[in-house]
Image (cartoon, rainbow, N blue to C red; front, side, top):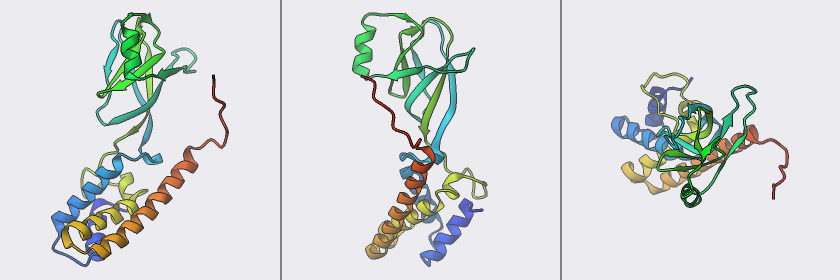
Length: 205
């Protein structure tokens, strides 16, 4: 099991420096922040839900979530119909002619979900999202995916940052960048295997 404390100690050994405690911690944090923006199997969720309110069209999404799409859950059958994403410009055009009912369009803009038509009742909305997976809360936190599934990726990027910005050794920084890219490609390949359906989906015209 790898924890933040274990990663810090390993990086100190690999760069052969025991005087960079704070710099190593910062490099790890910066590496995680960089990869929070990338979508992997480990930072996807489909468990975020909220309920609409009658006559309310805008809803504050979780600040740490990036929303590729969402779908409505039918409270009786649990078979959700897709709520289609549209552009903010199209949403504004539609709202020039206000309508209420069961929403079937949405836009995600300025960390808010905007629904159209404006909900006329309570509907449960489930979000399937790439979200910003948090850093470990402590050195000893167990099972944080950045320290387990993505350990190699984060460790190599943190070392690259140290070599490039702190120790000032561009040759070693380049070596670590190559290792980082290999780890990234491996994690993306695993993510593609886990999330792919193996089927072709026809386009609806």
